[in-house]
Amino acid sequence: MEGLEVTVLIGLTILMGTLIAPRVRLALPLVLVIFGLLLGFVPQLREIQLPPETVLLLFLPVMLFWESLTTSLRSIRRDFRYILPMSTVLVVASAFAVAGIGLLFGMPWETALILGAAVAPPDATAVAALGRLLPRRMFMKLKAESLTNDGTALVLYAIAVSLALGGNITPLSVTMSVLTSYVGGVAAGVVIAGLGYLLLRRTSSTIVINVTLLLIPFTAFLLAEIAHASGVLAVVVAGLIVAYVSPRVTTASSRRQADAAWPFGVFLLNGALFVLIGLEVQFVAHEISAAAIGRLLLITLAVWVTLLVVRYVFQLLNAPFQRRNPALPSRGAKARSMAVSTVAGMRGAVSLAIALSVPVASGTEGEIAGRDEIVFVTAGVILLSLLVQGPMLPAIVRWARFPVDHMEAEEYELAERTISGAALAALDDLAVEHGVGQEIRDKVRAEGYQMLEFSNARALAREQAIVDAEAQALDVMLDEPDPLGGGQQIGGGADAGAAEASVALRLPDATRVGDDGELADGEVRTLQMIATSADVDVMQRSPLLRHEEHTRLKLALIDRKREVLLGLRRDGTVDDLVVRRISARLDLEQVRLQGIEDYD
Image 1 (cartoon, rainbow, N blue to C red):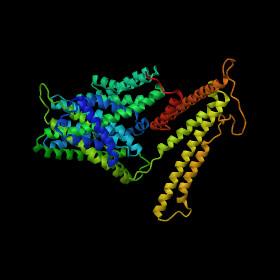
Image 2: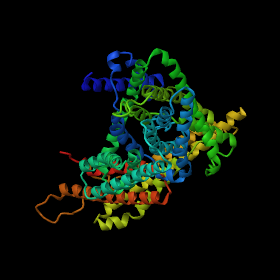
Image 3: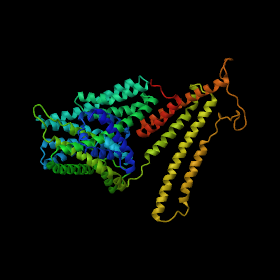
Image 4: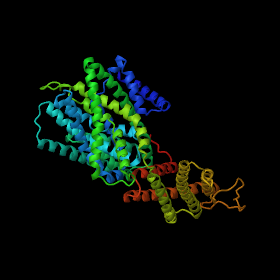
């Protein structure tokens, strides 16, 4: 099929999956994989092949960079003792365990090790697509693990391919390969992120900023590949650095454009990848003889079960070395948490890319034995991960009975109140600095108090809702009504809180006048005389100047809020994702005040 036909077909498949997934109550990736399998029954569509360099050089840099931008640095620092062994030692253990299974089923050792390297790492995009039901901290741990374990898997893959092609592997060469991969990958990411920072701080053009951000992941991957290091790790490191510095070197307009474009682009790439996975399964199934299908299905099932068992056992062995989590006080709660983490470790794009990257032929050694088997088993494991672990995950999470985590909501409310209070405290100084009159100052102060009271009311309403929910749960447990009538007062309390909040929002506005030019108390106030020239109509010019003063003061307050917010992030008081949410709101307000930038 022609490229345009394939593009339209995949686009229509993603569109149909997006429409159908909510109706059948299945995750979109699962629906898209099923659609890919169904399309694979058409012989012409089954011939659509996914070149491995397409996944490694086009799909992965974009998807990993976006996942890095939306990852919490504080979570990585806090759970580093968990993330490091899970992204290194566990990958090696999983690869060798799978290689052992391959040997039991008659695979050559080198082929089995390549298979182990392919299926060992859980995939960041699969975790991001299907892991949103997890508690926030567990989701961030899995995401960080999945972002960094690909480097280990690719080093193992390179070693296994070298063995299969007759290369000489020594402990020294393995050590150097690992060091080059990790150190070189980190260095490449730091260098490219540093160059991007230097460029971004010298421009305020939205187009220039976002083109620079788009080039950073590809350039980091390219530099790492030139140095024979981990391109995946280079992209992740560059993304984490850019995420930290971007509020200071990008503009509100560029961030709003990026926040709209990047998720949409990643959504399309993810959707296309899941459709192509289904097609690839059909392709390799038809390429292999019918007699070998049964054996390969057994290998696929055995490898999938082995990966789950190894992951759970490794977590058990690693638990004594981890920092205690106060949210999981009992032994049973920890075991349930490990079970959820095990099911959530799904395979995806990286595994498929590694399997497809197995050399088809070599000028000296020929084709690697069992390449079709590697691709078939890898695709089958990905399919089982998506079609079995994906639907199981919601049920496992409900069974685990995780305590409700209100930390993110509490930090959001704390940050909102802190930055609002800091802005109000600095209002007079900023007004003097920007030459803003008393009337506009009073108006902005009223708006600030309105926002602060709204934040306080929302925090109180959330706390009251928690108390009411606990009381209601206790009533159900005791199977008797609340003698104080709390069940009826829950809704009333919420309504009352909303009413109080709405009353608090109706603050007096000194600049509001009626149609006849009178204030609420009947006092008539004339417009301020700002112009000095007798030829200027002050009745027309004064509102424009007042609007300019109001805009200047509001922008100065937004800058003050953003400065305090970044200080909270730097001190570790609030999480990076909370900062990102509030920054997005501040950016929207700033764009509303400044207007949309003309890109022509």
